[in-house]
Image 1 (cartoon, rainbow, N blue to C red):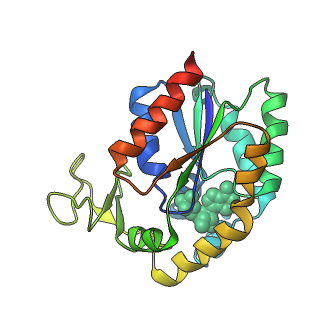
Image 2: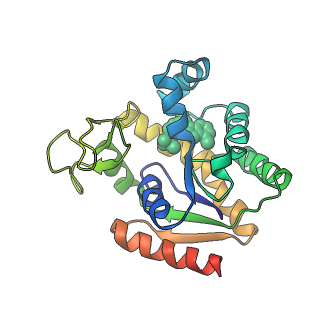
Length: 217
Ligand code: AMP
């Protein structure tokens, strides 16, 4: 199964991916997570990526497409993947179509999480994540039991560099201009499912599960 989780930054793609991974035997590939690892390791790619990420801009398509081509060919991606944060432009979506065709695979569904922009700004600026296991928390709606400490693994909770108000606003504008057109792109292909993402994670996940169960049949 190959599915894309589409939605603006803060729409809940990461949170829902965590749940899907637990219930279905597939992995999540998050371009944002891969890039943040490269930044942390201070690789050449990481240095280039950081200059875009800090401003809330998109990393150039050719870099992202090359990175995803390598990732999708790896053994652990053969049973199924959730694509989180990719594609983010029409050029990336077209490259993905070609790549999947070359690999003899097909995109099953694109799930679009819809959340109003004012809600997204509040969610992103209150977001922290575990520096070890990557679990995300919202300091207002789903705070950790002990301040600054991950409930699951005890790791230290940190804030993403790009979750400050100014960068968040730019990321949302970039989403509107460059990523939102993907909604029509996948609607035309007949594989788009819209979900109201402005509800509790459990309610959103219920709808996702219904969609995924129908695909499996
Ligand atoms: P995310 O964790 O998905 O919010 O991504 C964080 C940042 O990484 C974005 O603001 C972009 O700078 C960069 N990024 C992640 N995925 C992509 C992508 N598919 N194309 C271009 N840039 C990306």
